[in-house]
Every structure is written in structure tokens, then in C-alpha cells.
Length: 305
Image 1 (cartoon, helix red, strand yellow):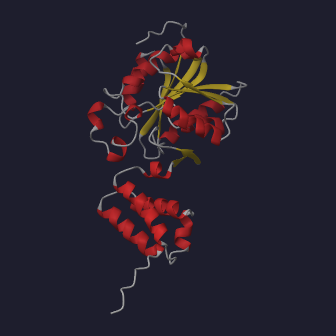
Image 2 (spheres, helix red, strand yellow):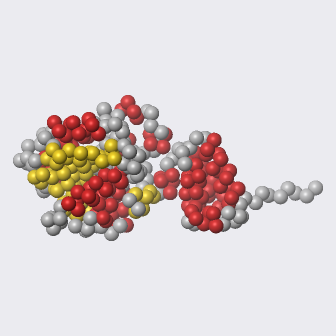
Image 3 (spheres, one colour):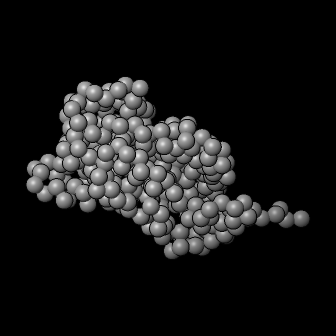
């Protein structure tokens, strides 16, 4: 009898099988997942998957794709598999040392850029970011506000390594300063300067919410960048505490907040002496960013916790 013929896999069939499988397993955005992983495995653009749907695939190409798909089936985020994520139309290197940039955080950058553009009388606008992560916020502000100098601090030396790579990749080394520093240190004394604007996307998932997160987040993203290990408001308390000591008179603070947290954080800011309080909604209609100004206080008075 003739030997059985080995199946020839074509792009269309492999894509359909993979998409159907992810759908059955209830993975979000199965088509996008497959497109990204397959394009990565084949070293091509996503559009080429549809202009070459009848292309026969080699054994090596199929093996490369299935290796990536296996990682996704173990709930590893696509961005970590690919080693990059898109944010504000820019591409950032990411891995398990940093939080994956979220679309909702673009609201924080948009509001920061808007505030920077109102400071037209300033020759150079000084911005302090607390919590660097991949550097997506600091780099984006520097890219879109040419008159800005962004100082970004993080207590993770590993995260700063990734951020430094992104700063270099985007050519903003002269206007983004990265510093290894813990927000619970006496930052007013260590920074030795004041700023026009503070931005932060602090970890705001509470300890009670942690176990209910999707495995992509809970099992892969750095916990310290996701949860404060407390009630979700711990970092906001510290940010509100130190802001008057590191901001110029009338300086502005912008904080990203979790779902249904805006009212509480705005109340905390009001109690902390902030004024001109407001919030901004993300594209999903959620109050995502809180904004407030504060009066400068005499330095060297911030308690060290």
C-alpha cells in the first residue's frame, strides 16, 4: 500500500484551527492573539497573513508557531511572548520585569501632555513620574512634549533596565532621567529639586482582589507593580503626602486610578489640601485619571515611613 501522505498545512487552515481552539478555551481576542503570534513566528506583518492565506508552511514554521501558542495556552501574555507592546502609537520592549502598558494609561499621558501644553510660559517643563515600569509614560511625555524634562523613579532596578532600553530606543536620553529610588524614602531631599507636574500609575489592586485577577496578570506580571498588598489606596496616601514637597507652587498631580476609585482618591486629595480637582474618563467611559493642584510646602519635613 502507498505510504500515507503527510498533511500540508496552509496559513488559512492553521489560523482557523488555532483561533477556534483559543475560542473554545475562552481566551480573549483569539483572532488577534493568533495573528500576532503567527506573524511573529513567520517574521512577517499581520496583513501578509491575509495576502498569503494559501501559503504552505514548512515544518519549522509550524513548530515555531506552536511553541508560541503553547506559551499563550499557559496564559503567558502575548506582549511578553513577543517582547513588545504598543502604547500611544509607540512600541516598547517589555518582559516579566515590568507591567504591560495598558490602553487606559494613555489617558494619563494625554492629560499630562495637555497640562504641559498649558505651561507655555515655562522654557522647560519639569515632570516627575513615580513608578517608571517600562518607561512608557515617561518616554511618551518626552516624545510629545519637546519642552519637557522627565525624571522617573522606580524602586525596581530590573524595571529600570527595561526602561533604559526604551529610553534609548526612542532617542530621549537627554530628556528622560531614570533614578533608582523608593517613594517611601525622603524623596524631597533626594531629588533636590521641584517639579511642575507629577504623574503616577501606582499599583492599585487590593490584596482582596489579587486572587481574582486573570492568570495572565496574577501569574506573570510583577506583583509589586500591580498590587499594593493592602487596600489599593496605600500608594495614593504616600503620593498625596509627598506632592506638596516636590511640586512647585500650584503644581499639578495626575494619578491613574482603578475602576470606581476616583471619588475616594479625589476625596483624599481634597483632605490633603489639593484644589482644582477633576477627573478624566478613558475610552471605556471609566473615570481613569484624577487631577489636582497643590501649594508648595517647606522642604525637609516629609516623614520617612
